Length: 337
Image (tube, rainbow, N blue to C red; front, side, top):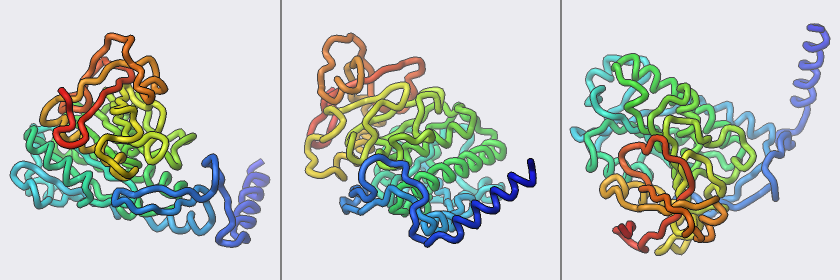
């Protein structure tokens, strides 16, 4: 049996190695092979939804254990980060990290990095609202692929590496998962769930901000309701850049979740998720009305159920479940509360 299995494996490897570098070896995403997606800067990029041998080789160059970077922001250093290095207790002890505070971990999206708008907006909002440790994860080398399958693989491997970093940080500092809020935007939204999943689903609060659609439609690694103690998703560009269906314990569909007031592009709609979230940290506004399902939330027909719940905010709403719809203003303050 072993001889046959080994021979079969070697034969498969030989066949793959003999294929041209551009030969497709995976076709998971429905629809056309090449699809346009808008990055956070509003640039339309052609995304390949198939995987080739060249893509696999390119993905192998990304090693999140060594390529990811972790930037600490606190009220003592709100604008210039302090680097944290896994397995380096001396660097941690010399930093402003305080194990008595809550810790927020931010995961950017596709084609983004540590200084992208998602991070600059949310870091400032969180530090203004509460005295916390904010750790910005820069996984930009893994987030730069225009192949959706490779981007998913990189998202998953980065999530595992971030979980390892948090595990070490807790061992070195005495912090616990009950002190954590993990927040991700776009493909980083799915990664937020993956991080907590790798930590035994024990993170207190996990937030996905318009988690990505392309590459995730039928993917088992996507954001799941039980990834954390309390999970929440805010949908602002569903069916385009963002995932359409509900993903979390609680899903919010502001303005129906597709096109946001005051926006004239999908990039703006996609970004509204983190602008709404940032404002919610300061105001605890954005009260949503409960819906029977996400179809009615997209249609804005949610007037028969009595449930109300605030979107976003500093603290998890443990025990709450459901789908909620609300309307926003076209410009700050976005909340109508």
